[in-house]
Length: 335
Figure 1: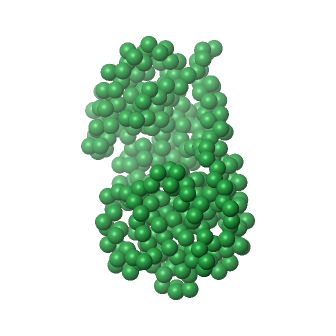
Figure 2: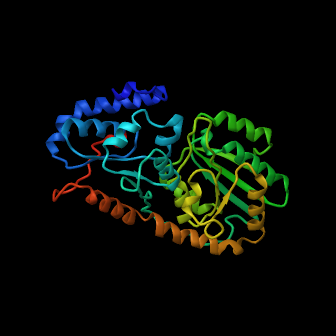
Figure 3: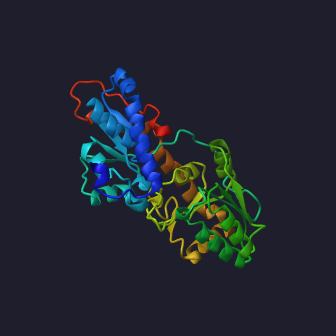
């Protein structure tokens, strides 16, 4: 009955919902044979739909993740209310998303803010500029509206207009805005300064962070409500010693302390970004302390050993008596 209480937000969410339900029906007997004591859906869309259905079919408790995409895009997942009613715990990775959960009537008893974790700690050999008198800039993310790339190009155009700050920008990622961004790069006359390099592997991206001086993230709240919590690429760039300039929208700047280990800026105000970049280009060593602090805070806040330990502690707090807690994703993360 829950499916008919409100309209489905989108065709994509309709597909996600019924794929999750189908997975539960097909795999219920196989999962029951493992005798798991708790099931976990890593996202609030397909995986949590599957674990909700499995929980009801098998009488096994379930927990779930809920992140920005699940909660904000077109009002959130179709079955969110039903999932929140039955789940034992909701893991989210940013206070921005947690605030949304609290607005929906949930409390700290169910909502747990547990950051995503990093397991690679690159070593930056030098904090000098990667190229003499030229800033090497990088931005990483899908080419979609919520990443704010059109605002980023305005910032770069303003920086290029100043003439006294040379830079090279690499934008890593693919998506539906590729052609539109190419057009904007041409319109701004930035062809020699800005390159859309397409998709890269995790290893290649980590190497780009080590080669770059500055990581820029210009995320916004998209017209359909979608936004980022804390994009993984921000703590990854922090761990590589990049200077972090990030949008103040949603949860991106939760990764660092503004003015201490990075800068939280308005992507619609190009002057804020240009001022920091010009000062950094003129005297990069004055920002070395901020970059080193970012590396330290990435370790403190995003070490996967700590985040996994915190996750397990919360699983063990679920009221399962003396029974052993196990986590079963059973390929739901790939749905």
